[in-house]
Image (tube, rainbow, N blue to C red; front, side, top):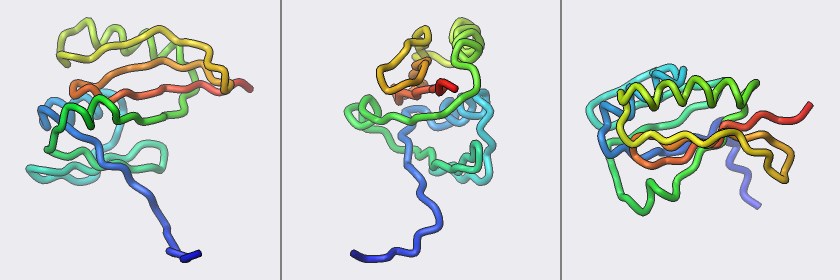
Length: 123
């Protein structure tokens, strides 16, 4: 086995409309650490992801992010309001659902079709 001596792992997330997607992740509470015209580095809860100005429909619609949250129902309420504002076309939100792996999950699709799992773990 190779020891990569890794210190971090970051995903790349596609964006159909880069500016709109940047604004969406900011609205969710992600912190923008760096950006240029093609790439943005976001941080949330000591983790990072790259949002990129690249879009492939099949990839975006099969890309998922899992975010552990304190209150899935509260996230659902806030995201429902955000989606109803029409500020972010294409954003969809599903009510929290108990999943067999032990989490209550609110599902939200970003403006590009990326699925976020906002999971509240049972205590």
